Image 1 (cartoon, rainbow, N blue to C red):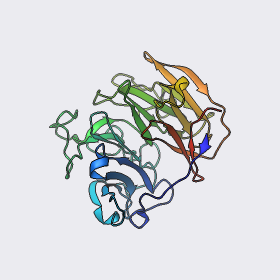
Image 2: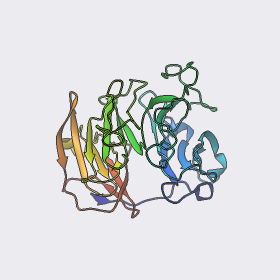
Image 3: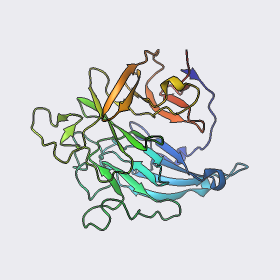
Image 4: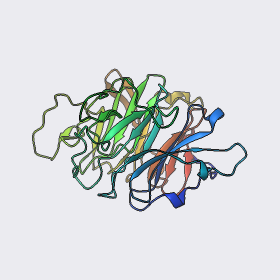
Length: 310
């Protein structure tokens, strides 16, 4: 991994509450960004709530913050942790949002299995115009007591997820409680899945030692215990051209351990699971891809590294 220069795109520090797991957590460029300049930002606001806002980046600079439009607010004031944080535009042009369960420990608010809250969910909304619209094919549209924005539920803190355009798959890396970290891989078009939290933590019943029923639960493709790390950082399937030998492999890391690993999905199994043995470069906070589909790694030290051949 090699370091690359950084450039300031947007400064909204005055709008953001920070500390612990709060802060500016993600951004996603509109699929039509080249013509409309819109970028969507996920952060915790001054009230500690989850906020998603749209900004329009001007061609010649200046005035960016004044273009802010609030898209969605999710109340999140009880605890400072488990804010989720990922925004991704899907293969269908919809905006997908990963929210945490509201914090505390063990899903204190009971969010994961509660379909009447936006916490502990993957949401799907149409932001082609604002106010946002709920897609008619979302799984809980028109069902009383169930929020129509919900695409999937039963997640604890899906800090990072991504889409693979080649296989049309969704990869969700969900941060575990005290024992298991997991990656779920499903067809991006499948709605209404339950990933198990807080009945399951990875492939283990939660709390540990209790019994739980796998019926109706989508189990992770892989999980690992806390002898290997403490907080998974999900990445992307590599689809760039610089390293054709790793094409199709999903790269991910762990915030505590800092390793770089990958696997291939073959049928319903994770194969060719590799630890790349990279020299630790700090706590891995996130991954990113550029317009050429090359892969980058972001660290807590402020470094941005690219994936290259040694």
